[in-house]
Image 1 (tube, rainbow, N blue to C red):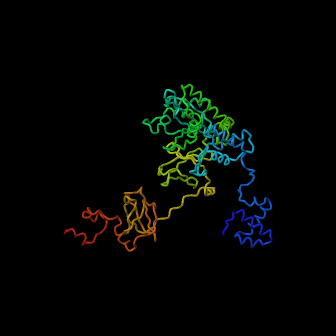
Image 2 (tube, rainbow, N blue to C red):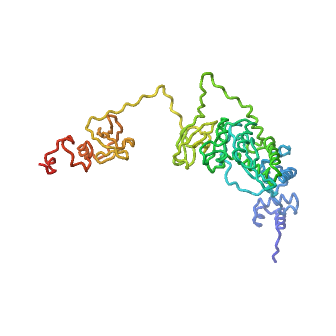
Image 3 (cartoon, rainbow, N blue to C red):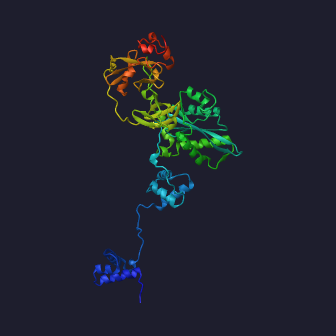
Length: 504
């Protein structure tokens, strides 16, 4: 009769056999396990008796790095109170509350996933694939735009004229208006300049309130005139390129999620007062992830400490710095330009067009017809510049013309001349003009008025040179061949040829 033993009973029986004196190797072979398993069962039996031979969890008895329950509860409370806060923002406020031990960012993310406060997402692009650029100090560049979405109780929608400092992310303009026409937009821009000063540059899209680029008129709009009068360089984005003004667009996303979500206002004045309060909190208190979790005011206030511009010497003209002088390049068919032997991508849609390059604080700005189309970090040159010479070399002496016979040929519409049944290139500028062709050893020289133009290696059949030199003035026109006379041609024709026309 077969009796089925449990796992614990089999382990206990194996332990008893070893304790009775049987070798461990024989017991392990009998039960089909390794010797290490038998020794492990012996240790368990010695520590806890027969109850210790049962299977138990492999989970460690303690985990020193486990997040404390108090910290986990605080993370859940902050996330529930502020659904828009992510792991970095939650970690910032945990540090301000001086909770200890402070968890890592990945631990906060796993905590939110475990409690179902966020959905698992897969990153589409690597963080290293994103290329970010910003100005090196405040008041160098403002990004301005217009957004909607501010609703009043009567159903009217208001527009917001927004402006962000590129370096500090400081909001310099947040003005509400019923209609975003040219006059209200320029009034908001002028009020921001009266409060904070005029920036060096301003970057906008191609809206009609900012530029007449795609409008019917050809003159400057009011916004361009305002920039011109205040010495501000107005930069425009390329068409359908919202990522160029990505900082102000990201500000719009924050404004919608933290201020406008589910809110309506009774009047424009009430909405403006609430917006001003939120902007003051955004500038002075709210930490910004793009600038190291500090408030934008901490960066923007450094603009007042910038050194004043150096005045030029008396009697000397103030020259433009070399890095600000625009350079011209032509875009290749692949959509690239070359600067200092380094290629920079512009766009295949600009192939063949001329663009202007401006070096500014380590950045290479590429503009097409006054519109900023690309901006790259200046990369080091691939090859060093040749050493400077003490004196420029003089012009190379032209090789002398050969003294042999020459023939005259007319340059065809493609810039070539024909000699001995072979075409030789001269120049497109000399199409329709006569040039002289002569042999100089194994080369063919092409000249005009005693000036050597081109020298080619002889590629024609040398046996055809006699026929080429027999017509030094070129092949006569077929229609006028019968009207040539001996005096006109300047040659003594043989008698049979002169009488071939039937004359006596």
